[in-house]
Image (cartoon, rainbow, N blue to C red; front, side):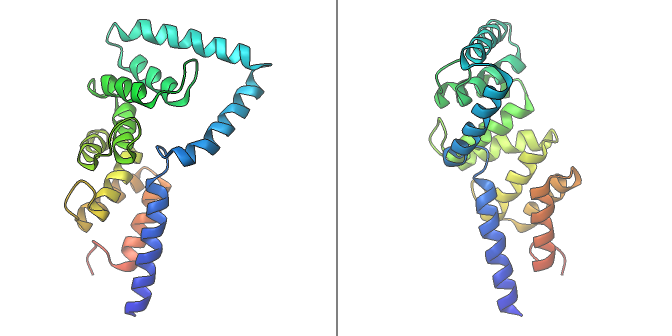
Amino acid sequence: METDISQIRFRFIHRLCQLVQRPCDDSVDKQHDEERQQEKDDRFENNDKADDAYKRAVRWYAKAVFSDDACSAYNLGVCYYNGDGVRKDCIKAVYWYLKAAEQDYVNAQYLLGCCYAQGTGVFPDYAKAVCWYTKAAEQGHSGAQFKLGCCYYFGDGVSRDFEKAVYWYTKAAEQNNINGVYSLGVCYSAGIGVPQ
């Protein structure tokens, strides 16, 4: 019986490690970038039109940012992160995510947490990642709820706490976040952080 639980825990941890690295890991982004480039090619007859459209968007976002528009700051960060209309620059992306996150823009808070967790554009800092994941999770962002659950499960940036991990996995699962659903199922099947 103990061997079965150990195997379940190993598979769970292995799967979570794959999932935790997702949206901010540059190695995963290479494939995503290729897919995005193909989408751009499909949407526009040539890249010049796509680049012009993104450059115009960046110009408008930059103008709106100076009016303290959180959505524009977030979108500008996304443009810098993806290299849409500007040269890819994760440091500038983090700067604009921070501007939006400080105005309680939930998607920026989530992505800022990802950047701190992965060390994208900043030095890795799980304590700061947890801070931003928490802000986004409390506003109902299911991805942040899942990532926060992972932080509690592994003890990254916080003390390891399986019950809190299950709490946040549950919040994510209630919004049909597939990673939250899967993680919660594994916790129940292995008896991790749940009543026995």
